[in-house]
Image (cartoon, rainbow, N blue to C red):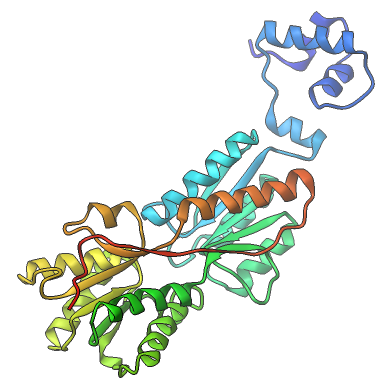
Length: 333
């Protein structure tokens, strides 16, 4: 039979209310009584019901994480860090896969409210008013990672996407490349799309290199969109010696298409990616990338969230450093 708090109270010789106060860290009992009750709890193997405990403590020891996909390795690193920090704080993580187009976002925000999570981490959520209004209405501590909002003052952890894209383009320029194509993300995306495009364009202008609109192709950060964009560049017979792809997945897609066309990387075309996921290191040749510290971004976001939940601290926005990781996909001209 399933043990209840009444069984613990009966065996301990105290009231149900006393057991409840002890298990929830409230006052009103002696140290001797506390030790006796906890010994009975261990003896019987009684496990408290998290939902019932939450009704008393107003805490469920869970946090919710909203992210567009659990398939891409970008989010895998972030989630790994969040889960590890949550576990250290005796919290569980409720993961919500909202879909790349955010089609399930509002449904999951409602579910997080119903589950009375203690806090929320939002990864790469599109900055739509309806999403952020729904999150703010929950009145729960919230952290953003790999995204931000100018309108809603929610603390965030991210890299400077424009500066990181500038660095990637600058790296290719300093390797001697002047005809540099870009496989960009969604142009309308103000977080990871437009800033990376602007960083690429600004680097070209700063080095007095003509910006050719025909050398910019758009994808959706996926492997297949990288293949399509590379195919478009080649079919249009554009002249370029290097490609900056705004995600590792698109970079590997471009690399794969080049291989099928018999184009040698980096001997004929150099490619640099963006993120530094495992796929970049596993590809052949291994991809040179501009790296986001994905694990550390997830770690800092989670640590800041728990600083708010547990300690009531005020936390600041964090811009994490990016870096160039050199491997084998870029050659010097």
